[in-house]
Image (cartoon, rainbow, N blue to C red; front, side):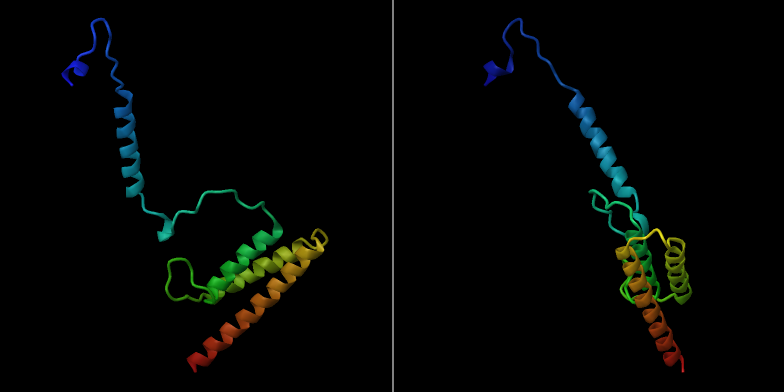
Length: 137
């Protein structure tokens, strides 16, 4: 064992000090990442390819936000859904504006999707509004 500890005459020992600096940098980066609060308590979005932008994707996103605003779906990190009917109405009106502004430029599938989405959201809005009215009396 002691014979391996001493290199033979004429050989030079090369000590790689770079790994120490790399480990320290990684520790510092991990510490910094752990100290950063995640946005609104939400988990980090998994990395991967995003779907291509489309009218249906935009409308679906707005529709989901409207359902959350109506209290039909709990927002991420919430136990009980919270309703904000003014926000829900605004989102439904935004989807309707998209529907009107894109007239003549939509495919038949996009038209059917938007029309169905608006119909379902309006029915949900009326139902939630009637439920609130019944609960308050």
